[in-house]
Amino acid sequence: MQAKIALFPLNNSPFSKELEIAKKEAEKTRHKMRHGALIIDKKRKIYLTGSNSPCDALTPFWILYSKCHPNSMRHAEISALAKTPCKNIMKIFNLKPMDILRGATVFTYRLSKTGVTGVSRPCPKICWPALKALGFKDAVYIARCNNELMVAREYF
Ligand SMILES: [Zn+2]
Image 1 (cartoon, protein in one colour):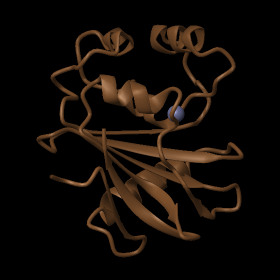
Image 2 (tube, helix red, strand yellow; image 1 turned 180 degrees about the vertical axis):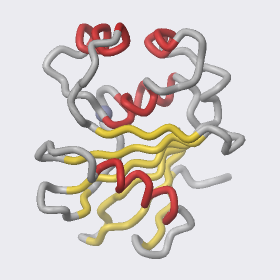
Image 3 (cartoon, protein in one colour; image 1 turned 45 degrees about the vertical axis):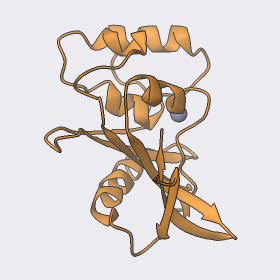
Image 4 (cartoon, protein in one colour; image 1 turned 90 degrees about the horizontal axis):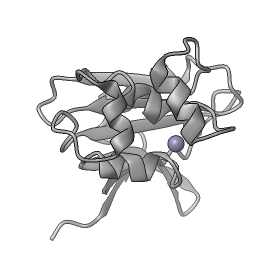
């Protein structure tokens, strides 16, 4: 049986390329905490990126999001999810497995204001349960282990 979490060295993981894309997303935001996310579907055909930058457009998606999560900023993972190419993006809020996202992987990266890499596991309150419910397979993020930053791959 596969372990639920696998750890890799920060600078030598099989996910360097994907984490680099997530990092670039994190660099786009001016928040104190800078988060970036990359979603890749099972067939590796769809790449969705997002950061925790503030809502620039009041689309129905973000209006509903702020109703569901008042006082919560726009999380990077949700920003990426909001770009899912499906007919009805509001289906994301049903939190039921979606074919297009089933078996997908999310990569997350976090930077401090000064650009220092930090722990980036999707938040346990909003993002983790949402990604799990939508049918994601695993998450790849920065973790701290024995005071050392590592890359973690965790299965939902
Ligand atoms: Zn979150």
